[in-house]
Image 1 (cartoon, rainbow, N blue to C red):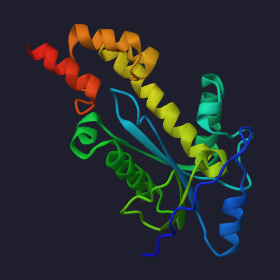
Image 2 (cartoon, rainbow, N blue to C red; image 1 turned 180 degrees about the vertical axis):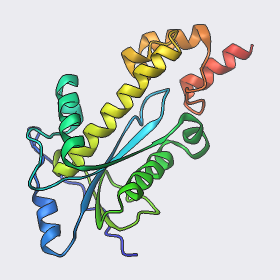
Image 3 (cartoon, helix red, strand yellow; image 1 turned 30 degrees about the vertical axis):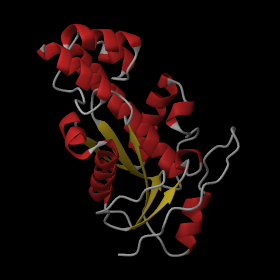
Image 4 (tube, rainbow, N blue to C red; image 1 turned 60 degrees about the horizontal axis):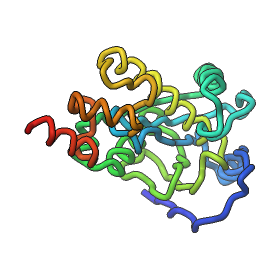
Length: 219
């Protein structure tokens, strides 16, 4: 199956916003059911990495789509509901155990391919530099794609909101760590909790701060 290589790095304006131009250009070449794919949660010390694939209906694109990092939590939640109501969506997660077994990059790409398989698109736009193996279609990687293509921006919102909601639930299940506040990132409070309690089953033991806390807990 043909894979289109990632494009060369490009500088983007700080105030750039995504549009539907990339998808429109692909549609003119005959591509149909174009999915944007993005992930959330590469950096945290705990929890899964979550990937989302979204095929927007060009007649019903929610207003205000943008890179999830540029939106408030309330705006992300509202847009999440609008995306779910108007688009085709699939989500896949790689839990901490898979991240430890594969490494975070490989686990993220694995989750992206799984999310794409859930929709079976005709073409995929991937945020970043890498095109995952095992996609069900041809694909293109877009650097800063969540600031350029609306379908990737939508996927970034779905992935982020899905993961945040999961971390809130993990916070209730493991109250000592405060996951609902920091979403598993390595904040000072999280590191203190790790030092005091050691890692829980959802911590990524291959990450250095968790590995160090795990070693201390065994002494």
